[in-house]
Length: 528
Image 1: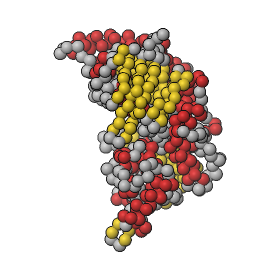
Image 2: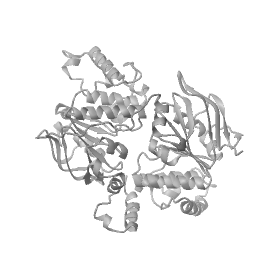
Image 3: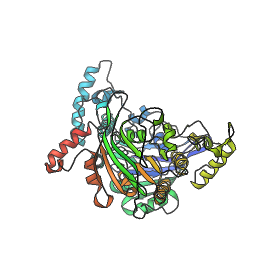
Image 4: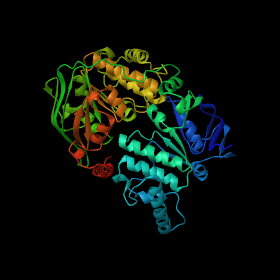
């Protein structure tokens, strides 16, 4: 019988009182694509970090191609033929592609021979695996799709036969994700073994041969992908049946709540990030903004939320908002009925070292309910936090825990509870389910739809096209700081939206397929 490429036996790992992995065993056969899925905190990343040498297991054994192998650090993992592409790339931004490929794998003190050899091998690898990228391009000038190719080439250059990818499609357009899957299939045909960590069940079903499901630090099941379904996998992950679609009635839009006209923004370096953006959001509807990260969505939310100044005209319920000066701040926005769930919950939505009850009241601590004369009524804040924790099923339930003690999904619930409980006229919500497990995704989607059904206006930003399609009543697509077009979910598809996300307009579609592909490749290098 063929030996497994990887076999983990009885792996356990704890961090203090938290048991991250408990007696996990798994076999991954060579020349296959093996998926690993689970809720936040299920132990997936810890298990892969043990395999890649970031952590040392408390107990258990690792076998590589049938041989028991000690992996004390990442250098040992690389020597064993294991490569890992992290969700957040490990590239030096002002180095070239070639310099990043060679970094850490130099052959002697003189770089010239290493770079010459690397250039030749890079050309071979690029041709063999369809990983074409300019070796002399600087990383900072490449889009995320190209940067991901560099990370894969780095691993292959180091002769990796086993490749681990952690949430690889989170920042890719649909076209880039499809290309990545073709690359993975090519690696598989060449006999490479791929481990894919993702929370997207559609990707698991599309690209993997087998899938392992983890729950609460244990291995729940390993199944052949062809013999399972998204519904079964979701139930294995969560321990109950999960509704995989967004259950919502048609929208009944009312009056215009938010109107944006010709909004422009420059960043601190003077680069124009918004270029004449105009849009409207009405009561009782969700306007979804689709686009690859870095195309102006973040800056739009920041201006509307009072975190950044801009130029143009923005009205809220018919009254103009200040876009510059002292009254363009977040506090004034809240007073005007705007709530904001920021894209980065840890940097902009929470203070990680503060208690949950303190975070649950941030921004609204001047509410008369939380004040006693000149002093804050901390007990009232704690009671309010306890109620939010109960209503939004935030775990653990202790309001005295610091924000950093909660999983990413529960941190997100804490921010959403704080903002939605104010019944805002307009909710700005960025990346509502980024890094959130499938059970929490279902809950968060239900809360957003319920707010819409209570007659509120919602501006939703997400890089997850499935999420945009499922939640939105209208979809606007952004590219390079502009609105490329607007569609309704029932009259479009992911292919059309993906072209708009890459800057391909209806006019462009009159050109040949070769011209469109050339434009996509050119623009991918410019998309942040």
